[in-house]
Image (cartoon, rainbow, N blue to C red):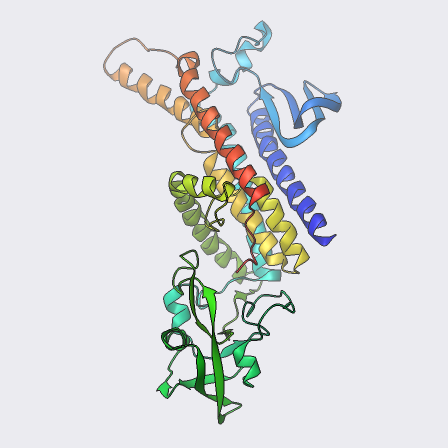
Length: 415
């Protein structure tokens, strides 16, 4: 039940953020005296609507976004009444059009910033000192977490009767023990511990350890199990010796801040999210084959893109497992990503309209300096083939990610 409530809550949060995106367009357009005739949440058949002034507000049946109708977005719009021509959007200065078209993305960024500040004060932001990379994780002390069975070490899942007991647990090792030697070889850190275990052979091996400052030894009977490479969790699975232990990280993964201190941390973390979003955008083409293979039977690469469906499932899983910080982080990342994507200089997204507006402005300036007649406005009809191509590619990509998220979804607790 918690899973479905969390999934519904996340989907509703995204619907609200997209509705606020359109609200940003509407408010700024009205402030500049552009005419806004419609503001609707959703698409498809109208459930209800009402009119206030010159704008119709309403709710439609398909809750997959929303729209805001601004009169005369392009010179080619043929539904502008003669009396509305002076208020057509394309007639306004380029800086005003830029503000109106970017207001949607700015709304997403504001939502993300507010959510990050809230997380910084009440939930916690990722701790910069927490070992995140493979090299950092290898360098931590060899303090172990002992699993109940071979296949499950750190997750919250329960072992079944078919799962072999963890050798370390059978040998009497306990969570919090610090391993000092394996097979007589001194151990300095957790990376060395895993290397030595995997280099050994299945069978009895002596483990030296300290527990509450007292030294001890235990004979652990290593068993063979399927594992991915330590430095590549998505790599090829092979059979290696295991003890059924994982690392214990004493550094907290999240850190909270006071309201004032959280302001600086909010903008610092916001920049981290922005950089990560740009990197994710750049990796999309190379991830398409992995998405396709995940549909046709391969294991889902956790680094592949997800749709709103996949993000909602992650949000539901976070609520079910009692980790609301994951819910917040997915919401923040998705808002930043949507905001940046909408600013890309391609039609039909907002960034395409902004790019055309500035192209017209620069071209007019250049022609004036060359004492040539102003070439006028860009003909949007000539750009329609490119626009349709973008819509077709974007639609196919959306279908691909949704299909992958339904058939082979990413789970934040799968490893």
